Amino acid sequence: MMETALDTRQETRTIDFPRFGLCTYTESEVISFPWGLPAFPQLRGFLVLSVPGQEGFIWLQSLDDVKVALPLSDPWSLFDDYEAQLPQYARQSLGIEAADDFCIMCVCVVGKGAAEMSINLLAPVVINLKTRMGRQITLENQAYSVRTPIPRKAAASPEQVAQT
Image (cartoon, rainbow, N blue to C red):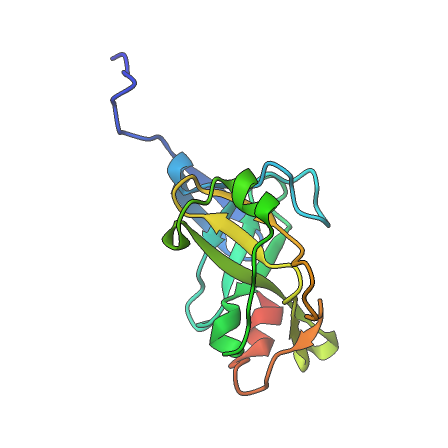
């Protein structure tokens, strides 16, 4: 049977991730990073995964290199006073027109022994929810750090995040 441009069916794919096991997804779930990420410029396709028991964190799992998965967190859930003013180039390159077009998440880093966790507030990951396109951007004229300690009470289970 021939598919038409109006056909909304999508082929499902299954991939075995080292951290998360088998995962089935469709192309519409993929987040595209046309510019890659600063540490991984060659990686362009990602899935957003949530893991039971790791509330407050999601994982940005690469489809291009299954060994790469970055823990992300909503910065406002950790810091009420966080103010991310997106540079104009970020809005334009991602096609952001309205506040509900996008979300901002920040990359978390688990330190040695998983006892210390930090979050990169200076360079958040911005995802256009409509186009499913993302980009990690550096905030301009902001005094945030790339390694802001996460308050211990907010890091409910850093050991679980490190072990995943």
